[in-house]
Amino acid sequence: MDWLDDLIRTFFDFSAMAEVLPQMLAVGLANTLIISVAATVIGLVLGMLVAVAGISTAPWLRIPARVYTDLFRGMPAILTILLIGQGFARVSQSIFGPSPYPLGIIALSLIAGAYIGEIFRAGIQSVDKGQLEACRALGMTYARAMRLVVVPQGVRRVLPALVNQFIAIVKDSSLVYFLGLLVSERELFRVGQDAAILSGNLSPLLLAGVFYLVITVPLTHLVNYFDQRFRTGRRKAAPVSGLKELDELDSGSPLTTGSKA
Amino acid sequence: MNAQTPIPAFHGSGLELVGLSMAYGSFDVVREVSFEVRPGSTTCVIGPSGSGKSTLLRGINRLHEPKSGEVLLAGEKTSAMVPERLRQRIGLVFQHFNLFPDHTALDNVALALWKVKGMPRAAARERAGRALAEVGLAERADHRPRDLSGGQQQRVAIARALAMEPEVMLFDEATSALDPELVKGVLNLMAGLGRRGMTMVVVTHEMGFARRAADQVVFMDEGEVVERGSPEELFDRPRSPRLQRFLSEVL
Image 1 (cartoon, rainbow over the protein chains, first blue to last red):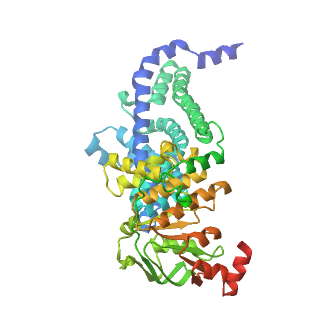
Image 2 (cartoon, helix red, strand yellow):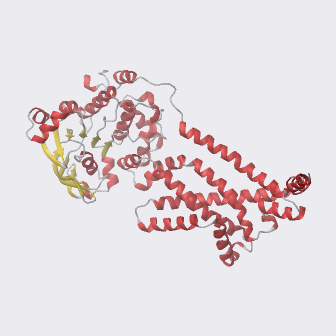
């Protein structure tokens, strides 16, 4: 049973795992979360701008939004990260210093913005046209109607899709290691990989995988829970008779009973 | 009814359509429509589907910009007004209510008072509460639209439009989407508004309502006014073959 021992040593070298655990938590997990959350927040802002520009009737807004989305959604994430991380290294150096970390976040944000923009656009466009019409009929400007009524409804509908996008960003954050991070900037994957070289087996990487799952699996289930709630919604407790409503009209106000005067 | 409650009167403004034409792209939907709506009167617009009735309403408040012609509100050219200001003076009630599903009945009514009219929030909610009471829905102020029946939703929509204190109310097939037993309540409410002096243009398929509540009936077909007059003239003595044919189908 040599091969079984071999497999166990490869994947379940617990002493190697224990050794890397503090770094995994303090450096890897922390950086993965920082990169993912930062990229998501910037991506949400970018995505909203792109979505609103994308449904505009003005071509000078719509066309750039379209081009941006096509570019960053159409290229492999690793390519975008490398192009931005290395291509803008000189510029970044004068602003952020030598670390490629900020550029990694920017690259991930740009990718996230393209996907989130499409999610927002789909959500906003799924809102019934009558909502905008009702706002306009009440004297709201287009911008105010979108901000107060249409966009909030659209965003609420796509919350599950946004959580999915966050999961994708968490996983893509591992690609930032390509830019060559400082020791203190390493995220989960890189911490695991470095430790794997030292231990000579894959156990530290397996541990990194466990950490990714600890972040993503609960979120996946949260999405399903949300999705369920959004689909079923809160229903009224019991059907109400239309005749009851007639009583309400009869008992009521000067206006509703007007015809009987 | 409680006779001691004084019924506040509305001060509706007059409306005049002069050669109003509207189009979707190159497709003419409304052609050279002219008629006058006296202050405080009710005009019912009837006609087969696709005759341009709903589009006509949207031309009056410029929700859809007219191609040519003019609408005068209290003698002023609406084409020269800022559309948002114009629409605050003209209320519109939709076939499918178009309430905001994530707002309570009260907030549906209060939102535009607060955000468009610029009333303080508390005052907006207070006026919204009164508007809901006027349409018999004081008890339902905290309900969301999906917890209300179609009739209740439409009454919230009417309260929402009324709370803006419009000079003219437009109704776009306001009862077409309602269950049959709920139609009468909404129509009575509309008739009550008319009696209190609101100027109304009502696109409707309810011929009974048109006969009972209208001061003027306009029959449209293929984007044109085919016949226009008092309810008696149109319903009892229709002159054009098209109106005769239409009435024979709907009455």
